[in-house]
Image: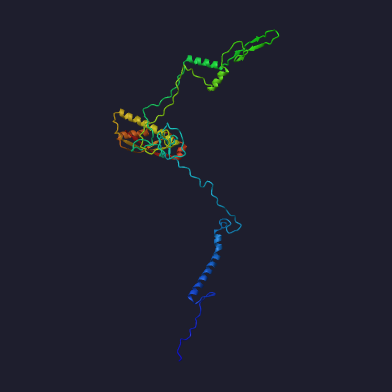
Length: 380
């Protein structure tokens, strides 16, 4: 029995993409699209590659860009481009020990009136500080490492007393005799005959120490004396019966100072000293400190003689002032625990000794036209 069946299905028209016909099957069509995208990307890269080459070619930069005949250039770093920078100048003033040897360190953050390298009399094996260990007071801020007595006068140079006129005459005569060459007259000859007239005889001659054809001997220096004088440097030897005192050096005078407690020290053994570089400004400040300290002591004595009572022990006065290139000062601020009279004594100690001297060109180049300084005075 014939049955009705669905009419045959005719395939529809296939979609085209350019010259490429895409398959109706979804999997096949995905592959075809992927291949097409890959081809297009490669074509795009081939087209833009020359542009990238010209963009990053050094010959295309600067004059003659794009011209194959343009000159190339090389980049060379300067030889000193990576040299280590110079160490910064020292910024912290410290008071030095005048009895320590002058020994300049390679570098230091400290400056003062003298070159010094850190040392202390009893070294600390683990110490690495640029300042020596000092026994002092915790509440004191000070860079001083030695203290003296203001009222002690420095020892004067002991001069040799001049000899008396009689001694001077003897010395001059001795010098004249020493300068005169000794001369001896020629001696005669002694003839010794043999036993017979035909025998052998001899003539004996004894030569003097300084033979000269003169009638009488002249006293003076001999070759042995000259050799002895050259061995002693040719210097005139002082008569042991008239000894003279040796000249003595002037002892260093250290102003009295309060020391800050400093536990950390150094492993270097020697005369107690900071690590510090000598600068012109450091020597200038040291002179100011000495001048102010002397004036402060005079002002204190003057007030005590005038009937004022000494301030309470432990009082301190901080005087901030501006010092300009002409050596003049102007007081900026005063902060003190003493009364008004004794605060004024400290201010006057700073102001009365001004001007302190004109700055050099090097000091002006480092500090400008002025600088602020603070001095702290302690009444004990």
